[in-house]
Length: 436
Image 1 (cartoon, one colour):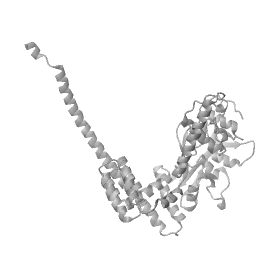
Image 2 (tube, one colour):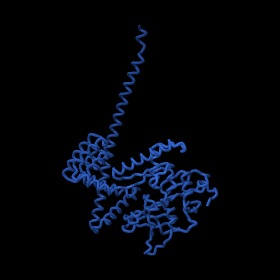
Image 3 (tube, helix red, strand yellow):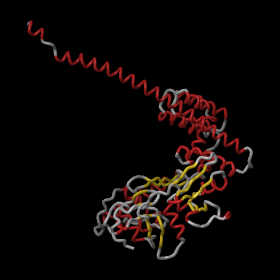
Image 4 (tube, helix red, strand yellow):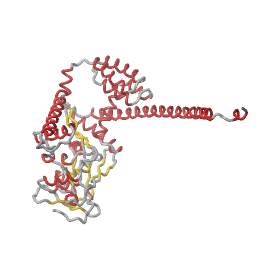
């Protein structure tokens, strides 16, 4: 019995040790949670201060506009001028900055309670965005104030995701305009955009009326099922291993590019749009797989590159400096506007710092105005989107061409930014025989 009494209970010892470990771990976790909560409050405070500064910049633009004509275009140029100054300093697109200026002004001036709660760290920027998005459509001032007071109280006790549906209902109930008027106004904002992804894929986003959107989806689904059934039931047809989703995507492309839903899903042969593709000779001949690129977007697979090459009515041949990789010249069998081709290859996109607007849709502009004696030469030309073309001509921003395709911008504050031409053509196998 004495021997048994001296033997410790291993299970009891494990439970006791685990309790001590759990207590220490909980204390550590509690401290970490407290730290993160404190940091989040500090971040919210900084975001509120950032909104205050951006709103002040927006106010400065409005103040400057008071001394000019009432034309909306001139007011817009003043805002662009300020957005470009900040965007260049932050290395951010000035279009994005201009959007931030407008958002900050709305938060600070139209939602002061929300801004104050953010600055105090009682809500997050996610809560603030939900409140602003839901409440900005309420036109009646009294209803707007009542909505914001209620929304801030809700935000202080729940997540941004959970409050979104409730605030949408509250805002809808507070609106004074009819759904017919709102729909007519919303229709004016319809658009189609392309968002580039990875591995040579992109997403097309279309904002269209709801009835039309569901009609499009229903037709795609019906055509996809019809195609699937026909291919499956016809013994003379090769088996179709595509899913309904894949067939829907193929039919979508075929309808837009050919106006006739093909069954093979080969929309590539129907492309009639203007795109700029760089394909090293080794990729064309099959000696190399990587290297083909859709200019301004990114790499494309070699099979697509070779298909485009087979279908293209003509190709530019590029002569590349062996060291700097700068484009020296472009020639073509059929004479075209050679300078424009060189500029498109050199620039790829608008040459304002941070802008990615494609060169194919930008203006080939003289940096030294032709009216002031500027030559029409590569050394005096650059692609500028219409936004930055206008900015250069109608504000105090200046652009100068430097050797090597560099373009130096000087802001109204005297700060300079040098934009380098992107390095787009790299031949990985220079010893390969040129197929041209």
